[in-house]
Structures are given as C-alpha cells and as structure tokens.
Length: 382
Ligand code: HEM
Image (cartoon, rainbow, N blue to C red; front, side, top):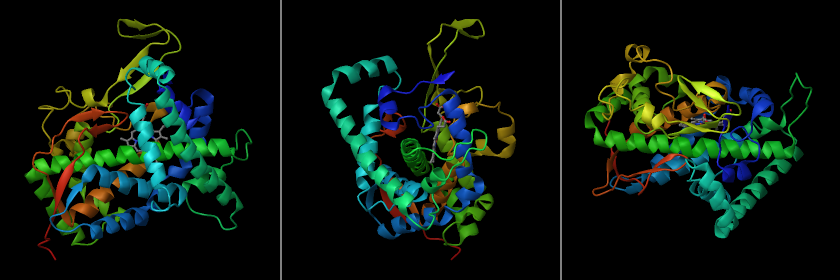
C-alpha cells in the first residue's frame, strides 16, 4: 500500500521519507532511524529548554499572545537547531515563510485529484510554490556545502545524514540531493505538527480549570520552579496524560491516505487498484466505543489501566506500521518539556471572543489563530 501525498508536497520534498515509496523508502528509513535513537533525542534536552527559557523571559504578566504563532516559532527554532544547528533569527525566518506557503498550498489533501487539477490551472499558485522551493533549496544546499567543508564534526541531524553508511548495500553516503530532501522533510514534518499539538493543549487547559490546576500542582511539587529535564518526565505523569488527551481530541495529523497498487479487500468490500483509502485519527479517536463521552476532555483516560483496555490503533496520532512517524520520540520530548517548562511559570487564558474554528490543512489548525492572555502562576512550593 503506498502513501498518497499531494503532488505539491512531492515537488517540494522530492524523495524524502514522507514522499518516497517501496525499497527506496525502506532503505532510507533503516539508514536514518539511528539518528532519532532515544539517546540522540536526550541530547536535545538543553536545546529545547534553552528556547523555552527565552520565550518565558520574553513574556510579561497580562501580555496578549497568539499562542499558535508562538508555538510555531518555538518548535521551528528547536527543530532547526537540532537538525541543522541553525538559529532561527539568521535569515531562517524565510524558511518559516516558505514552510507556511507549502502547507497552505496543499490544503486540498483530502481530494488529491482536485489538487492535481488545481496545480495545472493555477499559475499564481505554481509561481508562489517555485518561489518557496527556491528559498528552501538555497538555504539547505548552502548548509550542506558548509558542513562538508567544515573540519570539526557538528552534532546534528544534518551531520548524521552526511555520515550515513549502509552496510547492506555498501553505499557510503547519501547524495546532496537526498540529504536535502530528507532534511526538508524533517523540518516540514517536525515543527508544524508539534506546534499544533501544543496550541490545542493550551486551548484545552484554558477551558478546563480542574485539569489545569492538577497539572500546576504536579509541576509545583516536582520542579519547584525550575526548568524541567528529560529525567523529570517520568515523575510528571499528569503532564503526559494532558498532552495525550489533547492529541486525541485534536490530532495534528488528522487523516492519512493510502493507495492500493493491487485489488485489496477489507471485510466484504473490495477496492479496485488505485483507490484512495483514508484513515482518520480525528474520527477514530472520537469514537464512543473506545472513548466514552468522546467530546469531553478527560486526561484520566490515560492512566495505564484505562489504556490497557483499549485495542491498538484506536489512538494513532503518529500513524503506525512501516510508515509510522520517525520523529515520534522527539515529538513527545519536545511536547512534554515545552508544556512543563511553560506551565510551571505561566497560565494561559483564552482571549475573550476568540473564535475557535477547525481548519484542517495538512495539520489541524485553529482557523482564526489562538489569542491568549499570559498570567503568572505563583508556585506555593517556592
Ligand atoms: C506531535 C508531532 C507529530 C505528529 C502528530 C506526527 C505525526 C505523523 C504521522 C501521523 C505520520 C504518518 C503519516 C502516514 O501514515 O501517512 C508521520 C510521519 C512522519 N513524521 Fe511525524 N509527527 C510529528 C512530529 C514529527 C517530528 C518531530 C519529526 C522529525 C523531526 C517527524 C518526521 C516524520 C517523518 C519523516 C515521517 C514519514 C515517515 C515514513 O513515511 O516513514 N514527525 N508523522
């Protein structure tokens, strides 16, 4: 079964993990997987908390912020640093702009045929797209050149990609173009998804004061006003329960699509070759058979006992099988550390009259942003 991706995405990302298929995909996934090993992700702890600290210091009591924008910038800064050792400020804002153009232009994801047609007739769209790709390429190829020329090794994903050797095939390295495709894929796949998971988490907490208080109480006791570390996460189960429940109600990737090369049967249905087969996290994770009173935000659904009662794949924010998210461990680490780091100092309340409407692009966004007011959380333990 092949992943169905919008043509615009293929043109931008080339043959990265998201858009490649078959043996090529399998081989690349096997080669790249070690770069996301648990021990590698641990090393990104201070990158994550340093960027959180900068954000916390920038906010003041009573500030009005668009938390979607703040989370997008924060996760982009973290992912850029971990993947290519770049600081967001140095011209990489361009990259954020180009990423946004891509996401907005692939919004017909659920109707790939129409997307194809639109691409053919919409000249403005094609121009804007070529522009975004050009900006991406010049930044990433410059980084690859610099890295190949550098004497000292750098500890990031780009270096890991440049050093890959595949024992089975004897290949010594990925070409510059392959490295470019994989790097852009990680940037695109990594920052927007994680930012929206966090955006919806802040929204839900603002609407559920009991859960918010419980989260603050846990953070107060364990952290006592300091920044969290990866080693703290085990002692913060409620933090994880809140984030899990937010991704149940608002899965950043809300639908995945496949096409079958051969006739394929499921129960009494047979799908002719080339059918589009959709699986929606949003629908499945709101199914009352597995999540009673499904619209209710209830982090208690994530106690180990409650989780053990539910069949596999009733919850799949990171997909599953051969195409499962390679960045899942990284995403959990960013999400949980950012949530703990911000909530131990601030609480966020929804701006009055903020309209909340779902905007399902590649990721599930709030259509009108998410303006929130920043209030200091005073820790009774310090
Ligand atoms: C909360 C954050 C994230 C969510 C919800 C998420 C979700 C997903 C999902 C559902 C898929 C599978 C799509 C399908 O089956 O068609 C996927 C694939 C992928 N994700 Fe993530 N992701 C997140 C963060 C990340 C991060 C941080 C990275 C890397 C830095 C990343 C890189 C990828 C890549 C490369 C793939 C393609 C894997 C393959 O096809 O083999 N993701 N992601």
